[in-house]
Length: 295
Image (tube, rainbow, N blue to C red):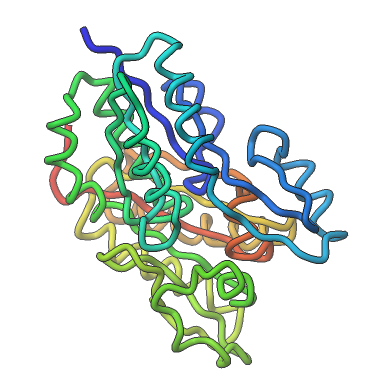
């Protein structure tokens, strides 16, 4: 029987439980803090990053070099796996997918299946988690590829930002250009469009109303997709955790009012990769729900 490894990059925000349950390999993005380069999840853990970030003047991200990606795939192969399912953030928002594709062209004897989630952060995570579930349930990679368009549509990401400057600096603006320069008293809620670009979902005047908009948007989504519901909330700075909890406490009762009782909730602090791109003052709320069960 073919032994399949699953690899997920740090921009997807994989949780420790997910990594342990499915024996996930992770690929850390490069984090540049005042010109000192770290690998997310390898020599830079979350706790250290958030201790450092207030003292850092400049920070950014970059994908691993093609040669380093090649070595990661080869190391997985040497661990006894026949095939690698390599799951990544949207190719429209990062050069990582292209770098992985180039690395695959240099490989010999390593079978890699690249998957573009067309999502980012915790929205991409929810796609990755579904893929892992299906693989461990015995579904083939070919079957998963046939499900992939619907799996992508089943993940709904919302991000609340305090500023767009980090998206602009890291060239992650996508289709949000219309918001640039118009942040005064306006809190944008961003998400992903069907092409895999970051886009504006809502423009909210006043930060106190953001939680209501996030909740309303998610409820409208899950009304049409009530199966296999999952919720993932993430935050950067400690003070943003209170905002995440406010969203959770508004959303869960309304979810249950829809008759949806079987759901999971995950809460985890942002990986440094995500915090560098969105800004550590951001927080995210993602919901996964299927129109018809995918099993």
